[in-house]
Amino acid sequence: MMNKNQIYVIYGNTPKTMIKEILTKARIEEEIDKSALIGIKPNLVVAKPSTSGATTTPDLVAGVIEYLQSKGYQNIIILEGSWVGDRTFRAFSVCGYEQLSKLYNVPLVDLQRDKYTEYDAGGVRINVCNKAMEVDYLINMPVLKGHCQTSMTCALKNMKGCIPDSEKRKFHTMGLHKPIAYLNRVVKSNLIIVDGLMGDLTFEEGGTPVQMNRVFVGKDPVLIDAYAAELMGFNLNEIPYIQMAERIGVGSADVSKAEIIELNKDCDVRKITRSHKVERLSKYIEEKDACSACYGSLIHALERLDERGLLARLRGKICIGQGYKGQQGEGIGIGVCTKGFSKGIPGCPPKAKDIVEFIEKNI
Image (cartoon, rainbow, N blue to C red):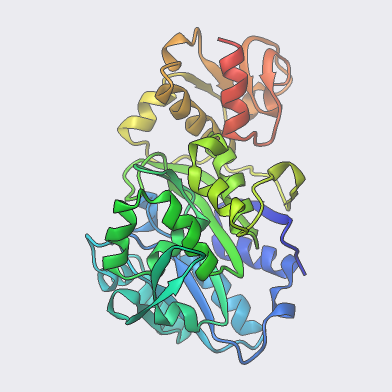
C-alpha cells in the first residue's frame, strides 16, 4: 500500500492500461472498505473533449472504474461541478462521461445542482456541496495544465469543482490562492490521479494542448502539486496556494524528500497537431524522434522562458530526441539522448523546471 511520500509515474498513451498498472502497484483496495461510497472527481471545467487539453481523459476514468469493480467495489459515483460559465450536464455529455455512466452503471452527480453546507476551514468559512462530503473515499483526477490566474492547476485547485457556483465567484474576489488552500482542509483527497496525457500550456479551458504522455499518482495533494509545478517549469513561489496549503497542514511541498517511482520510460514519438503557440515555440527546437514526454517538458520550459523575456536570447536551436544518441554536438541538448553535447541536461524525461534553470545559465 502506498504512503503519502510516494508518487508513482507511468508514461505512454494507453491510459486505461497505464492506470491499472499503477493501481495494482499501489494496492488501494487495502485501504477502502467494501461498503464505502467512492467518489471520482475529474476536471470537467468546460464542455470540451480531453484532446483540447482542458478535461480529464474518459479512458483514464474508465480504467479506474474497471480496476475498482474488479476488486468488488460497486458503490462508485462520478461527481463534478463545471465553472460558472458552463453547465456540468453539458460537460458530462461532450467529454464522454454519459457513455461511461451507462457502460459501467456509475451515476453522474452534477454538483451545480446540489445543496451545500458551510464549513469552518480554520478561520475561512467555505460552502461545500453536500455530495462531496458524503463520499467515503475521494479519488481526485485533475489535469496537468496551465491557468490564466494561478499559473497552473492540478490537485488542490481541482477541488474547486466541489463548491457551488456562488462560492466559486467568492473565491475569485478573495484572490483564489488562499481559499483554494483552505478548501483542501475541508474536502480531502484520498488518492490523486493526475492526467498528464494532454494538458494545456497556459489556459484552464484548453486550446493550446501539450502532449506529455504521463500519468502520476499520489496521496498528498500538496506534494503532487509541488511535483506538477516542477514538471511545468514553475518555482513554488510562483504558485502561492501550494505553500499556503503546506503551512496549514494539508501536506508537504518538499519534492526533494519524495519517493518518485517511475514504472517505465516513454518511447512514443507521435505528436499531436500543434497549436499556433506551440508551433511558435517549436521553432527554437531541432527535434529528431523525440519522445512526447520529453518534448512536452521542453515546450513548457520554453513557455516559462518566454514569459520571463529570455527566449529571444537563445542562439541556435535546442536539440532533443533519440536521433541524437551517440552524436556529439556544440549546442544545447535536452535529455539523456543528447549526452554527447557540450551543453546538455540529463533526464528521461527531464523536468521543465530543470530545463529552465539550465538554459538560463547557458544563454
